[in-house]
Length: 576
Image 1 (cartoon, rainbow, N blue to C red):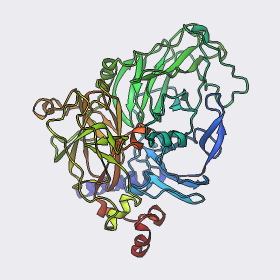
Image 2 (cartoon, one colour):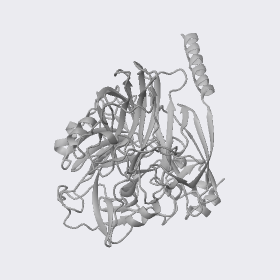
Image 3 (cartoon, rainbow, N blue to C red):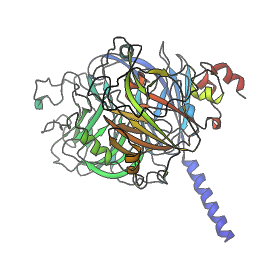
Image 4 (cartoon, rainbow, N blue to C red):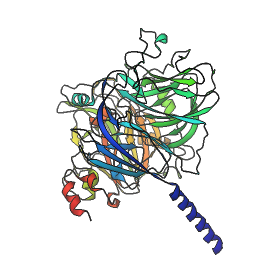
């Protein structure tokens, strides 16, 4: 028995060593700068990386280490990059959240993001400072399964689509408008982009348009001509999707083709077939489709606005069945998305997303140690329009939380904990009688390894009969989506209906108008983490909170990550 046990442990050691040998460190050297570009045919300014828009796609395997040497080539502003969906286990300073996990990288300086990608999936990266995501600082991050591992589905080839929205007003102008009194809303985007490409004031499908429309001339359109997806008949393809939109919730369809959803936010889901699908800002998916339609035709891939009255034309590209010419237009019009306010359609799609298996190795804990009730409201602060959580609008301090908590810096932020619930008398179905709120920067601190529930509660905005969609993203963790509901969450009625059998693991979840969404996660990743609405203007206007757990366990923070605010001198003094 002892000999068998010895051989067993020797075999496990060999497996571990082979996995380590297979893992690689993938190095990238990037420079971020503004540049002239025409994402939709209209000349403007974008934030690019190494002269590219969108930024370069990173491909790696689970277990690999990513090392990005990022140089800020902007003249007058800082920059950071957040690796959306990567949990940053052991490297919280690499999360790329300005003034939470690190200082902004100042002009002319270089910061090295070094982190491990521990789980296969479809991810992306984007700016997390000011309105720089709206300026176009984003790109794809694809993590394939580790060598020797297989995914629970098969396909012949794959494509990757990064979806975004685009304004002709630059991000600085948008930022000024959001901070103005009287308030100036940024408006709806001029275009929807597919891999950074869209068409403004014209249509690829002009001949099918009911209203007068100009067919796009793509001569000289290297920057905005659609990327065609070239396929062969009777094959199965994986389509990776991620939404880095600043505002728009989207609906995607492939004319004549069904899609089978197999992955959401880097987690496998129980496969289910759809003819169209919603995708909110911050979400990512993988779908499978089979090229089983008439091989002599090409087909539209369409992206449409959901959840807001659509004033933005569809984003379009073509599924090109080879050997047909890519210039051959489909014979049918582009798919028509559900009505923008058909929330029942959206809710039905979200309800079908269930974990493949239990949702992680063990599934969700059966109970919780702490439950937060977070009310999303639109408010007034000194006459300025803001968004708030439990009547507190987030304004980040000048010293990153990770450093100030780790080093015990006093007066870096408000040490009073933010409210964990809101008044029982609050009517979420009506505009607040008193719309005034306060500014704050307190932190929700969790006991390490405790189980936390978050009830996201939506409500009426400042205007009567208005409640908006809010996709919420959690840094540093995946969470289980335990359920959705209408109206105000009621503990005695709703908690017993939670799905504890196979809830999906996600890092982004939507809360529908006048509804609630229940989440559960384990606070097992030492660091300080943002949790916020992924709509860029909403976060900029205060719709976010900050979580902290196990910060005393964090070590080896790079000096440069904390070289600003009150931690600058203290960090140098305490550095061994």
